[in-house]
Length: 255
Length: 304
Image 1 (cartoon, each protein chain N blue to C red):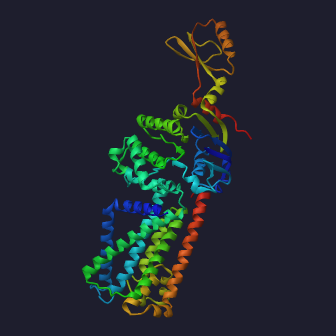
Image 2 (image 1 turned 60 degrees about the vertical axis):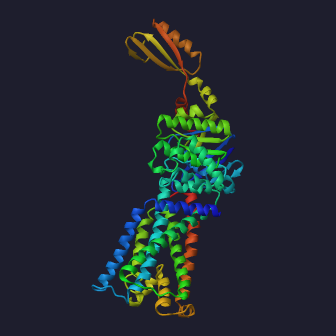
Image 3 (image 1 turned 90 degrees about the vertical axis):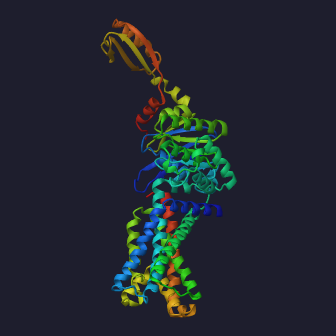
C-alpha cells in the first residue's frame, strides 16, 4: 500500500517538475498580481495594516488554486492519454492512487503558496506573528482545501469539462476569501456567502488567532472553529461519497 | 487462462448491447486474435477484461479470478496496452515509467529493476532508458507501453491494436515478442488488430465478434481450412474472356477469378471453357487468407 502511495507521489512530482519554467512564470504572475492589487486598493501605497491579513488569505488561495490545478488538470490529462486506465489496472484499491495524487497536489500547492508568499514578505516587509493557537485552524484549512480539491477531482471523473466550473469557483474564492480586503470589511450578506466557500472560515480563524490574539477555546465558543470544523467535515464526506459514486459510474458507463 | 462467460454489456446511453452474451475460453499459452469490424464490441470486451468496465451480466475470469469480485487478484495476472492511448507517461523516462507501473502492480523495487533492465535491453531501449518517452519515435513509445504492460510478467496480456502506426521493423519486433511470450514463457496473449497479416502470423486461434456477438472461435488453421469451400481459382486463358465469364485481359491473356463452393465444380468450369474452344494457360487455386475469411464472416447475414 505504502509503495503504491510513494510511487504515485513520486510520479506526480516528477511530472510537475518536468516543466519548471511554467511554474516560475505562474509564481511571478501570482505575486505581482497580489502586490499590484494591494497597491491599487491602498490608493498608491502598500498598507501595512492590511497586508498581513490579506497575505494569509492569498496564501490559502494559492494553495487551493495550485493543488486544484495539479489534481484536476492531471486527472483530465491522464483520462485523455489512457495512463489513468493503466493505473487502474492495479491490485491497489482505486482510492489509493487518488490519495497519492491528492498528496502530490498538496505538496505542490503548499510549495507554491510558500514561495509565492515569501516574495511579498521580502518585497513589502510583511511580518506575520506566530501563534500555537493558529495551528489547528491551519490544519483544518488544509484539510478543507484538499477536500474541495478531491471534490473537484471526483467531478472530473465524470465531467472532463470541469475546467470551467473549477475556474468559476476558484475565482469566487479569490474574490471573497479576504485576499483583497479583510472579511471584516464585507457587508454581512456577502460575508455569509463568502463563508460557504472553502478557505474563508479557515482564514477567519487563523487571522483571529494571529492578529486578535484569540485562543482556540475562544474560537470555539465564538463559533468560528465549530463552523470551520463542520465545513471541513461536510466537504470531506461529500467529496469521498462523490468519488465513490463517480468511480462506480465510470466503471458502468464511461463518460 | 481467460474465461469469458455469457458476458453482456449494455450502455444506458445506447440502449443496445455493445457485447451480447459473449463466451470465450482462451487456454494458457495461446495467442488469440480477437477480431471484428469497428464498433463490434472488441474494446468494450477488453475493457471489461481489464476491469475498466463492469459487465451488465456475465463474468470474466483471469487465471481463475473473477475480475469483478476478485479484482486485486485478477489485476496481478494481467497487463494491457489499450488502443488509441499513450498508455505511458511521456513526461517521464522509460525507466521511470517501468518503475512506476511495476510498483503499482505491487512488485518489489529490486525485482522491478531487474525486469526493467531485461525488457529495455530486449527492446533496444537500454541506452535511452533515461530519456523522456515524449521524445521517442512512435514505435519506441509503443515498445515502452508494451514493456510497461509486461513489467510484472503477467500470465495474461491484452494488446489492443499493438502495431497500429508502427513501421515494418517495429511491427516485426512486436510480432516476434508476442510469439516468444506465448511460446517460451507460456503467456496467454489476446490481440485485437485490423492488420490481419499480424493475426495470421502470430495467432494460433481467432475469435471474430460482430455486433457484440461471437461469430467464430477456431484455431487459425481450422478457420482457414474451414473456408476452403470458398476457395478462389485463378484461370488464365488465351484471348478474350468467353461468353459467361468476366475477366481482365492484358497482352492477349485474360485472367478470370472465380469462387467455387466444392472442388468438383472446378472440372465443370474447365469443361465449360473447353466447350468455348478456349486455350487454357494455367489454373491456380488461390487459398483464402484471413482477410477473405474475416470479410466473409462479418458480411454474413446476422443470425437472430
